[in-house]
Each structure stands twice: as C-alpha cells, then as structure tokens.
Image 1 (cartoon, rainbow, N blue to C red):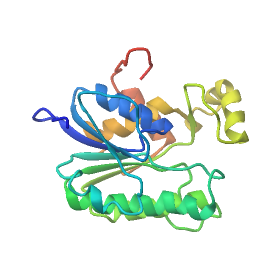
Image 2 (image 1 turned 180 degrees about the vertical axis):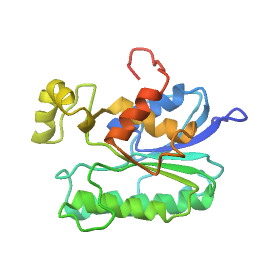
Image 3 (image 1 turned 60 degrees about the horizontal axis):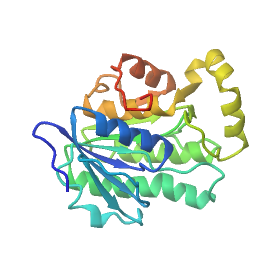
Image 4 (image 1 turned 90 degrees about the vertical axis):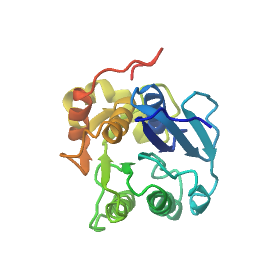
Length: 240
C-alpha cells in the first residue's frame, strides 16, 4: 500500500475506469500536492503508480466493507455514473442516487473532515419536478450530499462533455455532438467542456480548495472559468 508524504492530500477517487474519472486519476497522480490516491471501482485499472492504491469493490449498494480503507482521507472525487438510455430507469436511479448516498455515508463516517467533489450534470433539478429522470436523480443525489455533513461539497454540472480521445459513443446524440463539436464550441462555448478539463477542475477544487468561495454548485460556465485559472500540468503524451 502506498503512503502519502506528510502534508499532502489523501484523495479517494470513485469511477476511474470512466471517461472523466480516468482523466481525474491521471491528473491526481501527477499533482504535486496529492500524496496518495485510493481508486475504488468495479473493474481493474490496469496501471500502477507509486501513489496509487487500487481497491476493487463490486457492490456499491453496500460500501460498509470500505470503512477502514476510507479512514483518514482528505477528499473524494466521485465520478461513478451511467448514461441515460444505456441502462433501465431503475438501474439509472440506483447508480445515480443509491450508490452515491451509500458511498457518501461510509466515507463521511470514516473521514468526517473530508471534502467531496461530485460529477452531476447540467439541468440537475434539486426540486424533483423535472420531467427528465436524469435531472431528478442528479438533483436527488445533490440534495443528499449537501445534507450529509461534509464540510465542503462541490457539485459539478457540465453540459456536453467532449471525450477528447476517440471512443465508441454511447448513443446517436453523442455521435452527432462529437461530429459538430468544432462549430458547437465556437457558437456555444458555455455548453461544452473537455473531459480532461472537467477532471482537472474536480480534483483541483478539493486539493487546492479553489472553490470554497464560489461553491457548492458549478455550472458549465463556472467550470470553464475555473479551468482558465489553473496552471498547466503536463502528463507525458497527453494534454491535461
């Protein structure tokens, strides 16, 4: 198990096998103020790093077994999620709401002073009145996190997340948006964000505490402003 140098952030990352979570992991491992990263997920990452401790956890409906692992953490970056249409409505709510609440419950109990950075989405509706299940579920998860007792919660609501690297798009809408992205970002700059830029902001806000005055909710425009203020950090072979 890796050991963080004194004074550096102990960071827990959930969802590192996903698009945004993958970039968050790379950025966190290269960040000079991050001393240790615990990655928790259902699939192996396939990488190794002196700062990295990988924990496989299959059932996020019950995170009780993670209590000891999560002790003494300074922050969590939670990127676990699913695309609308990729799973049933019941499964979407379970992943979006139930898994988030369960992990937050155990993490808060083990590291009560930690900050929490959450990947929500544009249109998230904390009132629960939206006709869109995704918006209602993200809003419900946001409400639960704000009520969980963390000293700092940061809710990121990106609009269209540009994948940066080629991938198999989850549906037609994403294939279309990727195709028109060059024009879309010029015409509607506050409706798009690069996946790597979003990941940097989510990590930096809990490591460098850049969002304490502006939070807890960061819409797409706010995320872009945060990214513009960050110093460049280069990962060999990648723009991050």
